View 1 (cartoon, helix red, strand yellow):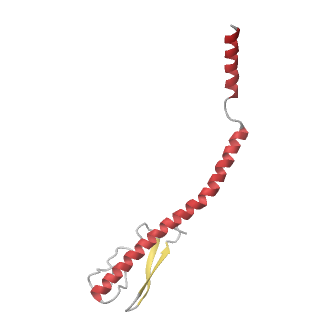
View 2 (view 1 turned 120 degrees about the horizontal axis):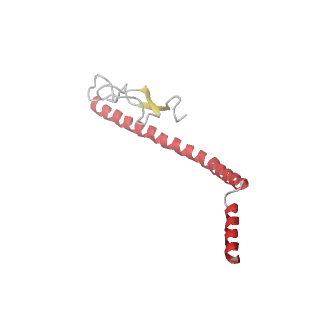
View 3 (view 1 turned 60 degrees about the vertical axis):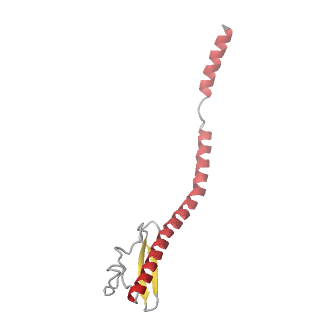
Amino acid sequence: MVIIFQIREEGIMNRRDQGFTLIELMIVVVIIGVIVAIAYPSYTRWAVQTRRSDAQRILTTVAALQEKRMSECAAYATSFTGNITDCATGGLGMVSSLSPDGHYTITLPAITSTSFTLSAAPVPNGLQQ
């Protein structure tokens, strides 16, 4: 009987010792805070680089359309809208000047008879700012 009572009493003592102290919880919170402080800048840098690929993709597409138009009409397009096969309209046949994911606006700032310039600017108040 003495052995059974002793085991039961040790079981009760162990139940009181279960759980975390305030210091242990505060240490865990500090460790998580340090990890977040290190990881967040890396994540934002990665997100910006991913969105830049959106601009690169649309710039490459528009450049290819401009070269196609030059080979068919002997002139570069002056706007994004308009039929690309109709040389009189001067368009590229695009619906919008926004990039596919909507992070950049594409412009045609300088067009001559022998060259064109494309520009991609982040959308105001967008995620790329």
